[in-house]
Length: 123
Image 1: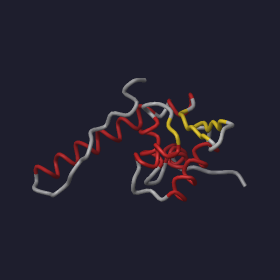
Image 2: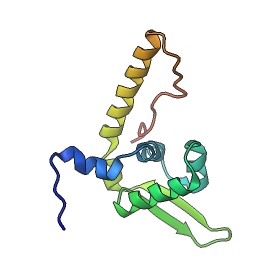
Image 3: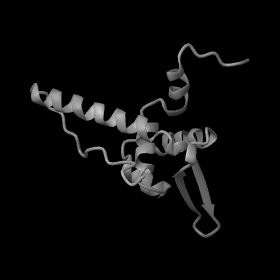
């Protein structure tokens, strides 16, 4: 059965939608990371969910998975050229969120932003 989209954003959300994928991609925007490093940078994700999200991103050719033949096995994830094209989308989403957080803070909401967006800065 063929896919039918009402709007182009649906195709985007098919690939990067959800709670964890944009966070994973932003972290990989700095450069390649081992799975353990990625898990530390996204501390609230379960290992099962992280693995699932990484597999989906790899299937969609947004990230690459490189396995080194050593003991213990070393696995490194990085953005593909296609993944790097998501830069502007992720930067815009992050800036929008930061503005929204600052607005809520100025209205007295108790919100903490641990770090400003800095993924993809080197690219």
